[in-house]
Image (cartoon, rainbow, N blue to C red):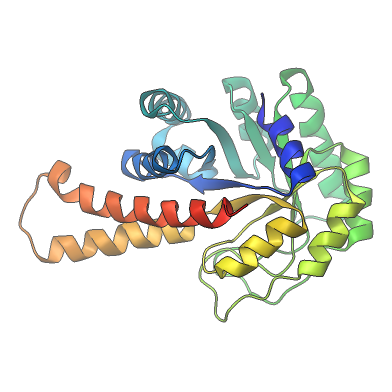
Length: 272
């Protein structure tokens, strides 16, 4: 079953998938090990910058080969695709899901661009995600501008998008203060649209809020910043105490720390 259909099942039964970004083999291995240990399906995400770093074909081969090797249920998703040509290349290359992010444009332009990608992806039968509202990115103001239910309804009906990332109190990167998710707003938007709802910026959100967000209608939860942070902090600590230049011996501790983090997140999400 495709991710598009799985997310609709999540919406119906009040469940969610964890969607984790990976940046190299070590972070990919950490995520897949956690999924295997917890017997959890997982969404593997690549950003445009990660694709530029790894190369599209290398990234796909790495992900597909690792999914097979680890024996887990997983899907490959393009995260925050802002370049329309790259989004289409990812669709052609066999991604299970893509995100077209035109959220920083006017709503009319966002609708136009999203509709173009939905139409392009239709024959492939894959999941298409978009974003509506202001979910701050790294370095941007974390002042909240929430997605309005009536705009979400208009957007989904106008584009036919399968999944919608909404602005309900989360932000990308590190939080300056403890986030306060607007749970009633999630519930209202969920009842207004047929699309599955996505929460970006879960790093640093308390577990109880994540669980309540799922109960209110969130079906996909994105995790990236905490993975990078715990991997790099662990690696930096390891390098302080060794002159070992064999990365095959230095990286595993950082990988294990990232695995532990993802296990904890999966256990939080799989609470039902």
